[in-house]
Length: 334
Image (cartoon, rainbow, N blue to C red; front, side, top):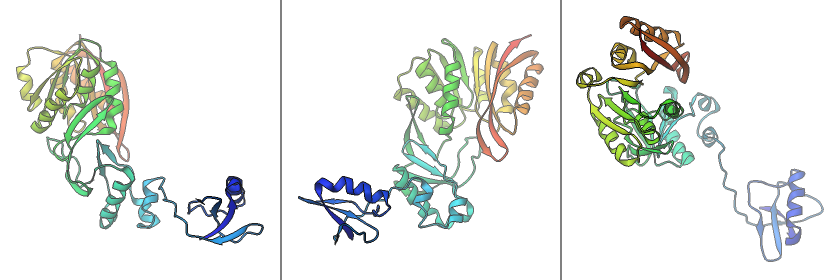
């Protein structure tokens, strides 16, 4: 490698000068020996002693996922690739477009290298069924779908193949937790592995009833209760909320309804179970707030109750023009 040879005492000043005039080769490391230093250069330069010496190449650190793939994919393919992905504990779940399926292994290996996580999976289907799971294909790393995700100080154990969990709702879960009052009785109608109940009960002295039709998710929620130091209490039930609720002996101060595809079909039940003055945290997929607000108002009207909409917001984008929408309503008896 062509280098400028300088006494060690002049090494730093010379390095700065060569960088300023664009002559230093930034792809190799400077070498320092007992009395002299060797600075890699791009071209011959007058006024310096030039020598040929072997130098160590710099390790090139990619600044983003796309840069890591630039030698493997065309610029058009990189443009098509959705470089956002879900990180759940030490697992990464990618979404790879159909036109890049033949490059999925390359993309998976790059994701493993870039994220430094343990396992890389690819989404193979949309979320489906009453248990809200999706097909995943293992791509790179270690094929182990069980992990512990950390969120707001809580530890959430889950199997990404067998249950639904979105790390993108972390801010929403914190927002709901902060709105909870001490001593509330809360029903999470579709709790999954329990991110809402765990985050809330870690911070508030409340009584939470958590229900999910996915028995495996409830099994993990039971483990998560043991994994975390809770101020409040959580009682779990595996089953359809429509059936499980028949055994309830009380009403609730708060209802969490995070099943955005189907929650609207349970609004009548939620209104039946809410205490006078209680809050319903309702979620749905929509392009606006109007549909959800109307559904909540109609369910209350049918039960001769009133609802005051206290908040409405877009939690995250799910597809072009569609959002995961959250609506908070305070329900009162007329």
